[in-house]
Amino acid sequence: MQRKASPPTSKSESPISLASDDEVVPMNEIHVPADVPDELIETYRDNMLAATAGTGSMNLFACDQKIEHLNDDFYDGGKTIPLSSNDPGHLFQIGARAHADGTIGVLAGQCGLIAQYARDHPEVPYLVKLNSKSHLVKTAQRDPISQALWDMDDVMSLVHNGINVVGIGYTVYIGSEYEHEMLTEAAQFIRQAHELGMISVVWMYPRGQAVADEKDPQLISGAAGVASCLGADFAKVNYPRAWDGMTQPESLKIAVEAAGRTGIICSGGGTLPPREFLQRLYDQMTVSGCRGAATGRNIHQKTTEEAVRMTAACHAIICEGASVDEAMAIFEGK
Image (cartoon, rainbow, N blue to C red; front, side):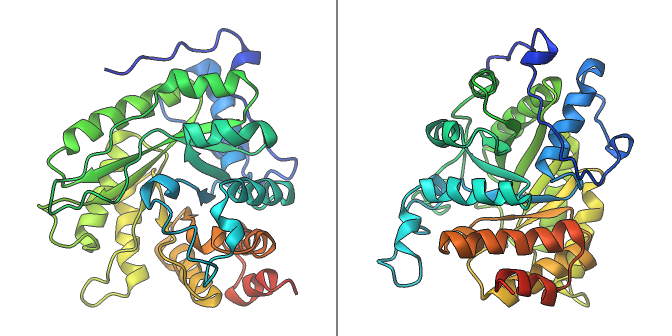
C-alpha cells in the first residue's frame, strides 16, 4: 500500500509551474479531470501548460533509460554515441538549454536521478518516473513487473525544495501476469497526482508471455484505451505495425481515437537518421493525430549542441506544425 501524500496547505506550497508568456492554449480550453480539486484547477492548468510549452502538445524528453536499458544507450566507445553521453549530467544540460530556448515540454526521469541534478536546473519542468526495471530479466524467464520505487511524498519533497515538478509517470505492462499490480499502482498515483494539481503520463506497453506481438495495432489501441480508463493525461505507446490495408500512421490513429481525452505520445524508438525520424514524427502528428512524442535516444545520443537543435526540431513539428524540411533546417542550424 502506498502512502498518500498530504495535499499542500497553502497556494504557495502547491506544485505551481508558471506558464510561458507566449502561451498558445487559452486556459479555459484545457480539459481538467474531475478528480482535480476545485482549488487546484489553476495549478493543474499551469502544470499542463508548463509540460506542453503552452500548447497542449507534449515534447517529452525521455531520460529514464539509465535503468530501462542500462548503459547500452549511453556508451559504445565513441563509435556512434558521443563520449559525453555517458555522464547523466548530459541529459540535464540538454534539458536546461532546451528549456531556456522554449523548445522542451518536460524532462522525464526517475525521482533519484532528478534529485541528483535538479538543484542545478530547478526551473526545468520535470516529470518524475515512479517505477522502472532493467531489461536483464527476459519475458521467457518471467513476465515483466515494474513496481513503484517512490511515492507521492517523495515527489512532493522535491516540490517543497523548489524543484519544478509538474507531473508523474508510471509504466504498465499490459498482458503480464502481474498487470493487476501495476494497474492498481498506476491508478492510485494518477489519482494522487491529480489531487495535487499535477499531470500524469503512463507508459503503456503490451508485454508478457501472453503477448505474441508487442506491436500488434489492436493491442496498442487496447493499451491506449486502458490508459484512458486509468485517468491518465497522456499515454506513451510504441509505434504499432500497420493494420492490413492501412499505413503505420493510420494504424496509430486508431489508438489515438481509443484513448479519447488521454493524449497519445509515441515512443521515439531507436536512433534513426534525422530526416527519417522527423518524417515519422510529422506523420504521427498530422496523420495519426498524436498530442506529442516521447523522445530519448534520438535526442541524447548526440552532442549537446546537436541534441538541443533536435529538441527544437521536434518542438517545431509537435507544437508549431512545422514541415519536415523546416524542422530539418532547425536541426542543421540553418
